[in-house]
Image (cartoon, rainbow, N blue to C red; front, side, top):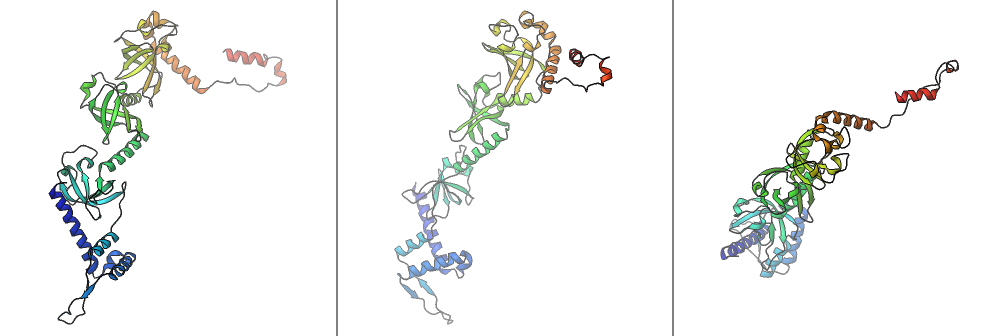
Length: 393
């Protein structure tokens, strides 16, 4: 701390101490300001200190009014009185304070302690700032977090950043519970993905959850819609997904059983990734054909235009599952003649949706009719035969 800061701190402490004592001694109606219980405590303290100190009486006023008693203190009495009316502060407390003095690398804050507390510039905001005036102004009153106990000079260290940090995590947890979509600018990229800020907190987007054709390096400064994957304050982990946000938005316009046109963007041993309107769906190798195939490369090439049917939409995991197997009129058509499958895609998809609707209704039990009168039995077929004919029909 430089000389000016030290002098300011000493001056503040001296002025505050004298003001407390002067106000306490000469306020004509102190009980009105303190409240009855606190006034009684102060009076008791005065009597205890007064028993050990000297006092004298001022000369009588010229108008003959009553004399007024003035108390004189030793250094020990003065220190004891300050200690008696001082508040106790602990690290972790959140207190109200007023900006007393701004300095190049911090600020002095009056929180009611004997000595002005200090907040360093790096603790003024959850975001990086260059000067204290970006956050604080003289005489501003706000909440402060007590970061560290008194140093050798009796000064507490405060923080605003810690309060903003706690409230930011609380807000992020709320957004995750609401399954909200947030938007944020990418400010940096690395080998694993991209970095963003959410409510002032640093978040990470894994490369596998970035759905864009641009190189990662070109994404800096671009704003993306994002969904939350992981929010863990204890481990300081905030993980987000661009892909899931896009899939959710796209899913609102898609339905299971719908035929869509897409483009093959990637081929893996386990399947092909199909771009359908800006989002990626997986055509798993087991959903390519009823006939066994060794690798998707035997059926598809990158940039092939294909017709596929949506068989599952998982908004929570941001996944779209696709199939061409369900569009085959005959097993193996996709291997032998994919174009034939594409031509009959809508027809086969309609049959698939009909089967799904019947499955949703559950198995239908045959209706059992009431037994006919005895005289009609001889002229009608047995009940078993009627039931059989109805089922066949």
